Length: 327
Ligand code: SAH
Image 1 (spheres, rainbow, N blue to C red):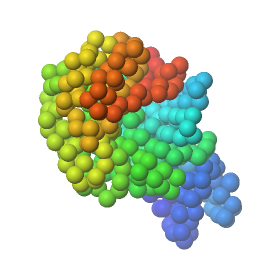
Image 2: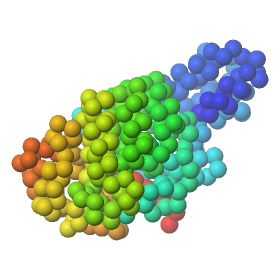
Image 3: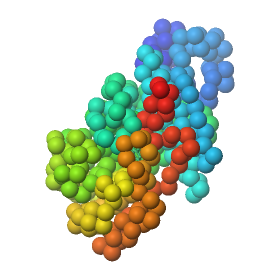
Image 4: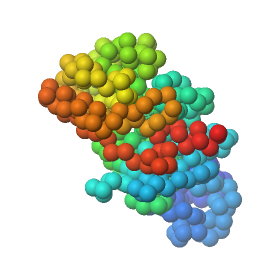
């Protein structure tokens, strides 16, 4: 919902400003048409129907996985692709993975979005519309900024969206922002009032390998990124979640696990090992190799969990649906 367009349309119609709040409340409860907004006068509903689309985004394609995952490819008003995913877990969590940019300016070699051209930053409304889309299907309780784009490079819009997410039932504590290690953005997050959690895409335990996988490491090498995590931890008193995508023979050797354990203080970090969603460039580590890696970390008292894969059958990894649709 373009909330500015809504406000001006209401003002032009001579309507009191509280109408905007009424429309927003319906949206946050999952209503998908003006017709259902029964506390608005009928003439106003007709007018809004014509003048203010319910979403800034249009659905281009939707895929449903056997495990309940729903992945949606949207277009912005000018036709730029973005993706969002609804993940339903057995423990009852309903988590939405949203994009913060169309495409991504960074070029991580294992990531499908990294191979696309960068489009632009999304607005807060465009971010919220991804969550509202799934809210129309069912209640949601978690949001992760792990779709397309680097959220810390679009932090104004991302934080503006985080401020509104509690209206949809997603508290700040259940909101996670994932970063490649963009230090200025991480420092801003550390200062932010909202208790959103921070996830760091680390993926390698040394600079040489990390720069190969993630060119951004040349700009912000490991030592600077981890120092930013320490500042975040000192300010927020919360652990940082480290994401580590498991690439066979590339970053999953026992020596990598030992290096990683030496790098990460268990009081500051929790590690999430991510099975690789194939995008062509690498082979994913086998479950046995992932388990061996996890066990070495555990020997060093570093807690690591293995991420449940969701939506494998529907190309649910970052950038994959847009890539498939374009092919
Ligand atoms: N730019 C941010 C957020 C978007 S990516 C970041 O990099 O953190 C969200 C997560 O998905 C990141 O950890 C990213 O490294 C990971 N990812 C990207 N491509 C992947 C793939 N093919 N398989 C598994 N994880 C992937």
